[in-house]
Each structure stands twice: as C-alpha cells, then as structure tokens.
Image 1 (tube, rainbow over the protein chains, first blue to last red):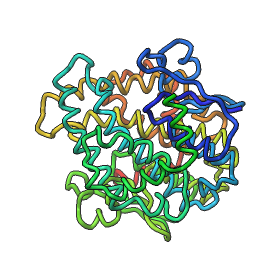
Image 2: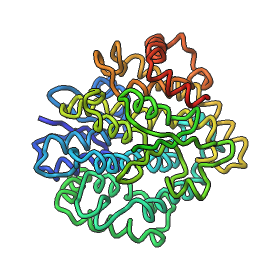
Image 3: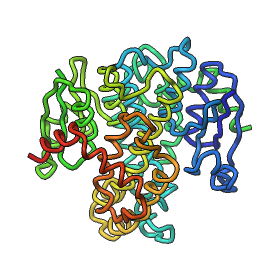
Length: 208
Length: 208
C-alpha cells in the first residue's frame, strides 16, 4: 500500500489530492515542520533530502512532486489524469509541472526559505529576497494566465495532474503579494478545483 | 522535423545530446545570450519564457528540459532511454531529473542570475547569493554522490536521459566552487559520459 509523507501548507497537497482523485488505497504520515521533523533521523531514512512529499511504495520511496504525480496517474490509468500514450500532450503536461516546480515554487520559496541561497544570518539579503517575491511570483502567474493555462482546465478539456498542482501553489499567491485581480483565469481555476470532492477531502485531512 | 533552440554553456546541451543519442533528424538554432537574443521579439514568439531550450515539433513548441528529454525518448523507443512502461523506475528517473531542474540547477543559477530573486542593482545581496553557491551546489552534489547516483549510470545498468542531464550540469561544478575530489563518482560519471560519440558531436556543434 502507498504511504504519503506530507506537511500541511506545502506542495505535498498536490500528490495528496491526486491520491484522492484516483481513489487509491493509501495511508498518510504528517511531518511537522514547526518541530523540524523533516530533519529528524527517522525521516531522513525515508527521504535523505529532508523535504516533503515522499511516497512509500512496495518498491521503494519516491520523491519530487512532478515524478510522483505521473506515478500515481500511471498506477490508476482509468482515472485518465495523464496522457502518457500521447508523447506531445504528455510533454506539454510535464513542461507545465516542471515550470511549477523549478520556477514558480522556487520564486515563492524565496519568501520563507531564503537561507537556502544566502547565509541564514544575512538578514539584509533575506529581506531583499522577500521584497522581490511579489514581482518574481507575479511574473510567473502572468505567464500562466496569458500563455499556459488553457480552459476549463490547465490542459484544456481534460482535468489532469497539472490542475491540483497549480491549485496547490495558488494557495500562496496572495501571501506572496500577487494581486488576484490581475490573474482572473488562475483565480477562477483555483475556485473550481477547490469545489472537487477529492480536493476538499485531502485538505480536510491535512488541516484536521 | 524537430528544431532545437539552444545556447552554448546552458542546460539545452542535455536535450541536444539526447537528440544525437537517438539519431534523430533535427536542426538547431543558436541563441546568443551575449546579445540577449532570448529576449528578442522573434524568439519570444517561439518561447514566451525567454529561455532555452525550446524544441519545435510538428505539433507545437515544447520547453523545460525534463519534459523534452522524455518526449525525445518516447519518440525513439528503440534507444531505450526512458523506462516509461515501468511506472516505478520511470518515476525514479523523473525524480532525479526533477531534482536537477528544481534544486541543483537553481542553486547554480544564484551565481550568475541572482537578479531573478533580488533587485538587479542590489549588489550586496547578489554577492551574498554568490558566496553561498559553493555550499548549496556542493550539498546537491553530496546527495547525488551518496544517495542518488547508481553505477555505472545514474539509474544503474542502463544509460538513460538522466545521464546527459547530470553530465550537462556537472560542467559547471568547478566554477561553482565545488571541489571535485569530494565527489569521485560524479566526476567518474562525467568523464565516461564525455567519451560518448553523441556527446562529443553535440558539444562540437555548440562550440563551433
């Protein structure tokens, strides 16, 4: 059986939602960042990166959201969440998720995890990074709004693994200083994803 | 026919190598970063992100290295560069590539592209980012060396799309301030990938 290690208010929600969407049998284990459990000896044996999410499978542990989302979609092909047999459409989907993990999520992370890229005691540089977040995250959302987000779903007519991933990161855009009025398609997408039963169930569990 | 937009000394080399490995018919177009051609009106029509690589296909343009590598591997299944029919092994491969794009490449980018995350005229913060690069990039290579790189290739016995991607980023580790003596497996891997005919051909074209 699958076991998802997650932390509330992190990108692990995307995989949690997809596990619900496909009606997988799985268990969860919550990692408390306030207690830095992600750096505990016990958790580092699961994921030496000291990050979430991690998915324990009967063949080993998987990490990295874009990889995990495709994995779950492949295990449950009937849910049709990833067009793996259509290389071009699959690549478009993968490109979207890759942009989220390597550009949007990274821009966001400079608000709260600046110590990854400057010394932790360099308060001026950490503050400088935080000041840039509204612009850098905003630029990502402008691109998503105008060039990437098809409708009604990210990839067009079909709901895919891109949708819960965008939804998850879009939880943070107001706190990142992005004016929601400037990205109405993204906000409408977020509202519609939030209404899905799988999404409500995953969020309810994480916030319980 | 496929057309790869690339720039020398960037991550586009990974896709270039894979196109050579599968013996694809393709053409190339060089983007000159010194002339900021990646921000030209003409190129932004190809890739609104203003980045390389971009791959023009008969169905549209693809971006993002992890997506493009899988796409080329899928188009040429006889080369067996990605185990798409084995969801767990495919996910491990995708997780490796996702780590490269979202963690290693990003840590490296703080040496030369710090203006993405702080104001361009904030010389002190940009210098602070540059000082952290040996540590942040070094931590990535320590993890790759000890926990991720199987042998002889990244995924073990079979050469996959992970190998040219790691090789490409590993071109930069000395300039990032990482001591190669501390990561002998990574250095040995880089040396062995460099000897492949496809790799030599792609590099020769980019540096011609």
